[in-house]
Image (cartoon, helix red, strand yellow):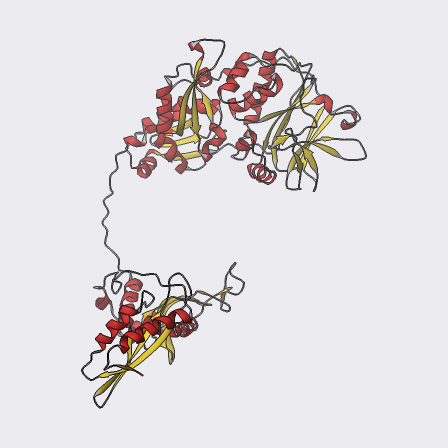
Length: 620
């Protein structure tokens, strides 16, 4: 939000220079994204300069700091300066009885205040109003609309004004009273907003409507509650009588409606972060006082419907509790001083404090909230970080080290570890949401391991293995609870048992596995495999009895190209008279495409040609 230095200074006459203010905000409250200087009054010289802070308030403080008054209270607390509420000086002449009726028919509206003011004149706003609005990047519209914006940017409470005369005779009851109804919209109900956007509402949206005696409809919508006003009772240059609305709406409802209809206003920004209903009373007083300054004096009584009043909150804590959590050494006197700077009503008995939470501070609810409140004002930079001294004796994680030992034993025996899917299509424990065919947690490892053996058997040539032996250590989920199991096997069969039973059977005991390191058996770098299928080819040949297989492998590798992804593997060898037969298996694969037989056949032809150049070698 953009905050005007001159505006803040009205609340804090002793406000220091902008640089010090900016520094205080940054170190104790919020991020100041930008500081700029402007000419706040074009009719003056350098004396009309103003400094504008672009402050990024946090979501948990938007309810009280997304306004000049809220920011002024915060700055006064940080700098220990006197805060003067100059708006308390507003005086409103004695009001007249009103015929305004307000009915709340939805829980979305927590408080609704209405007031009729008569015999106004719409025109340009006073210069100070224009200057204040323009200093924070807002456009002046007219004196009546501007007053609602001044109030919102000053105290944080959105307000709205309706043209009372546009609520025609048929919108009034028989005794001439105006009946405002806050209700949920009807399905498919439509409203045209002030920016001429046609919105189709749902029953989840709340609206401000005016009661009608016409038999054609029960009421007509004036505004989307907390989001945007409608065209029906828009203030224009002919407006003379108005209805002021100051209300409080549920934050979740406003956010959902605004998101659905695609309207994001300054009012939405404030309501969606929640506001105290107590703020309505102040805003009504301020908007009334500003209208008096304009010279308008015909006010009717305020109608205030406040069904569930905000309850008083108290928080108790001790200085020891604050220091223990912060790692600080703040004294009780310092804590009391910070509380006084922020105007907290508190009771103190030694190191024990009980505060009454200010009604506007919705973020303070539990003792832990006071840790941050006191810590940030005291200054986190004053807290010296000290590593706590802890007599720490490491505890052996039996399951972890036992798993390491089992893994080492199985890998030493030639098994390779796999990880199979935990979700299956049947089991004892069903999950709430998953893939349609995998709604259960596995009850064993064996089923997944058997599937893994079949899949890996197809890739045995690529893996350069004669046989597939795999194992898995994992959790299974049965009716009686979870347990860690070990499963291992090959194409002949799979055996499964609990981790404890396997350890007992193979005499894996506590002292035997504690020497294992975490990276035991995990040396080497991982290389990504190709996602494309491989092609296998065999080549057999007769050579003289003195020929080594390595000589043939060298020729194959030199002519196999980069598609020969593993070394030729000797799969058969036998001797007959003065000749030796060698048989090699070659694996071809690409990392960027699926190979064709033509490509591989051409490579095999080249290899055969090179082999045939040796007169003592003959391909079988």
